[in-house]
Length: 186
Image (cartoon, one colour):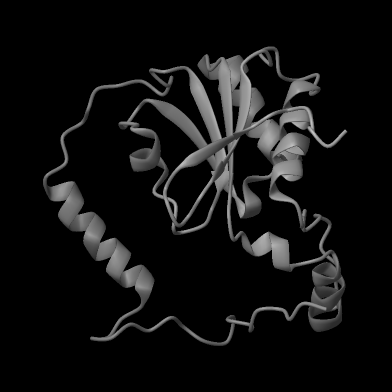
């Protein structure tokens, strides 16, 4: 059984020198805004691509893919898995904002590989309510990429499913490894 993360509701995230992490972020934003120049671009991604990736802090997605501001839509969540909310974002991206390609990126050493759906039961025991969402834990990262590709390709809400590709990002080397949508073991 996995162990739930400690509850943070009663504490604050203090940082050395005082204040909270959020205070530091807001202060950094003020410095950023002082030199900010409106790039004058619209919300439609220049490259007409949406990238779905894990929220893992070790992945600098724009740098890893050579992307600039305005090039793509980015959807990030735990595991980079394609959930109903991911389909919602991709549908808006395609139908309202013109994207045509979808790139899915999972990674090595993902935290979802060490969790199970028991995480939801443990949360229910702790807080008195089971979450409505699934953990979407997995053991085989390649197979989970295949499952995510299949979810995108078969969604009735997405009109553009001919350019959907999936990858595993190696957090040790920074390289992408493309996943064949057909499991070679079968």
